[in-house]
Image 1: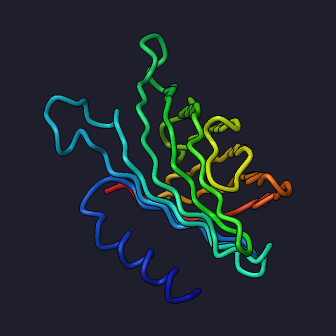
Image 2 (image 1 turned 30 degrees about the vertical axis):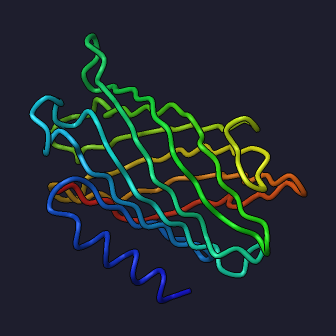
Length: 193
């Protein structure tokens, strides 16, 4: 398991020429994620508007699962009236397994982010939330449905380096049984490149 985690972390670090990378931990879990800003590669897209991502959450010793692997696509835009508030829509492809049961789902979701309007002498603070859902029609193999929500606060302690704290809840419900894959608070780092 640690070999898989090391390989994912190494791949994420080596791919970060710019864009964002994140690592979150708690006593039982580790989450490694990377998002690529597609506007950096395609002049037809605005910078900071379209993202392709990869995420891995380790769930060792939990439900006999090897973890959750995710590919994602997100489009977001700041609101015209309030530039510090952005909203996004996207989808993910999530894979996990428990024992001999394979979970594969294509959840659709909403994301929102807001930069708190604090005095400029104070470090910038951002808050965010996301919700993703895949009903049975978007759940494949042995899966029944998928539900995920996440809330977080990010504090930019150095330029492009943030400390993040939050809470995530993920249900990977199989046809045979409902599985709460993860429900935990976390703390971590987020880097913008």
